[in-house]
Amino acid sequence: MLVDFTVENYRSIKEPVTLSAVAQKQSDRQTSQSSKRKRVKSDHDIAPGYHVVGWDIELLPVLAIFGANASVKSNAIQALDYLLLMMAHGTQEAVAL
Image (cartoon, rainbow, N blue to C red; front, side, top):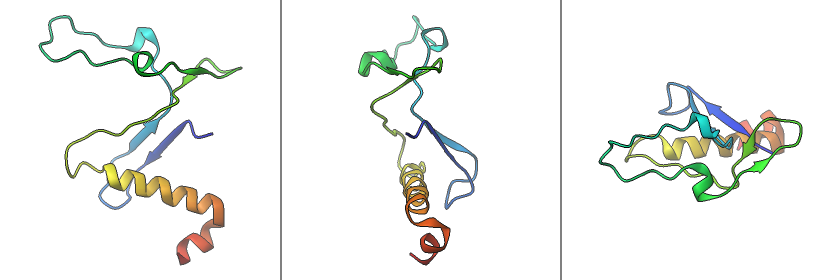
């Protein structure tokens, strides 16, 4: 089970970028009543989280990456793919591929 994935210094990603499956707690959500933008749905509006027994967190069943063109979305996915490749085949075989 992957809870968080952080990558930095990979291709065009210089600063740390994190993909997290941890749902926000109700008190951590920021809401602005005066905002003219459409209301952004909270994690629980999209899909309810799964409580992890023994931990004080809920994990999201779905993750999405949003951003403008050339905003490291593809490189973050490639870094995650490379991690999974190293986990499946080890570092020597991953370097050879």
